[in-house]
Image (cartoon, rainbow, N blue to C red; front, top):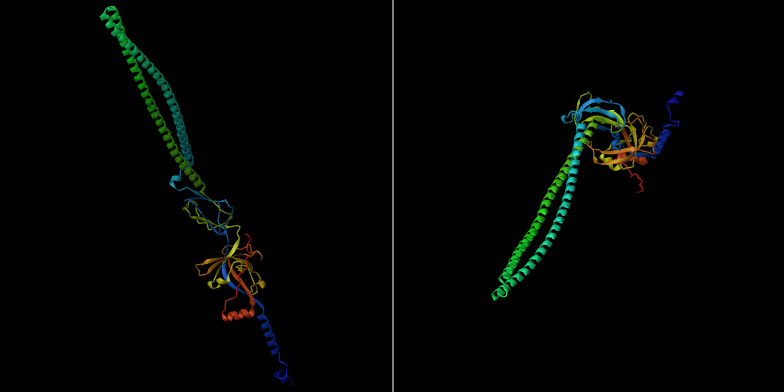
Length: 430
C-alpha cells in the first residue's frame, strides 16, 4: 500500500505547475525591469593638456656628457639640472671666448664713439669756417665800400681837373692871340703855357689814379670770388670728413650690434651646457649613459612624466557606434588593476566603476580604423584613483538610453541599433 502511494501520483496535487507559473511571472517581471543601453570600448589613460603628457627633454646643442645630476626614477622640480654637457665644436673651445668677445665689443664701442666725436668736430669746424667766411666777406665788403668811395672821389677829381685843363687851354689860346697882338709879353705867354702843361700832366696823373682805383675795385671783386671758392672748398672737405665719420660710425654700430649678438649667442650657448627640467615630474628613459658620450643636436636626453596631471581616458569607438556618441555624454570606467563588479545594464548597481564625461570627439579616423574619443573625470562622481598612471588600460562603457529588458532582448534579436539621445550641454553665458 505504501509502495502504491509512492509510485502513483495520480491522486496527488502536482507542484510543477506552480513552479512553472512562478518562473513565468518572474520572467515577465524581469522583462519590464529597466535596462541602460551601452557601448563598450577599450582605451588607455592619458591627459587632456598637452603640457601634462609625457615629454621628451632634448638638447639644443651638440656636446659630450660631463655629469649626470639625476638618475631614472628621480623626481625633479622645474628648473632642476638634469645633465651637464661639454663643448665639442672647435669654434667654441676657447675658455676665454666671452672675455675676448667682450674686449672686442669695448674696442668697437670706443671706435664708434671716436667716429661720433670726429663727426662732431667736423660739424664744429664747418660752423667755424662758415663764420670765418662771413667775417672775411664782411671785411672785403668794407674794403669795397671804401674803394667805391675812393673811386667816386677820383672821378670827381678827374672831372675837376678836366675843367681846369679846359680853362688853361682857353687861357693859352687867348694868350697866343694876345701875344700876336702884342698885348702881353712872351714871359706871360710862357707862364700860361706852363700852367696848361701842368694841368694836362695833372689830368694824366688823375686819370692813372682813377684807372688804378678801378683796377683795385675789380681786384676786390676777384678777391671776393676767391674767398667764396676757398672757403666753399674747405667747407666741402670738412663736410666730406663729417659724412665719412658718420658712415664709419654707422658701419661701426652695425659691427658692434653683430659682436653683441655673437656675445649673446655665446652666453646663451654656455647656459645650454646644462640641461634643465622644463617642468616638475619623474625622470624616465635616459637615452645616454656613460660620461663622455657624444650627444647630437636635438637628440633626446630623458623623458619626464609630469607630476601634477589631470588624467583623461582615450577610447577608440567603432565607426558604426560613432553616431551614438556626443560631447557631455556619461561614461563608466573599469580601470586595470582595480577590482570591479559590473552590471552593464545597471550602472548604479555596479561596484568599482568610475564616472567620466566625453570631452573631445576627433573628426578624423585613427590608424586602427576607429575614432578617438577623450573622456575626462566626471566632477559629480567620486574621484578617479590617485594610483592611475599614463598608459594604463581602461574599459569604457558609454551609457545610452534607459529601456526595458524585454525591449533590449527584442532589439538584439532583430539586430536593431540601440536608441540614443543627445547629451544636454549647458551653454555658458558669454
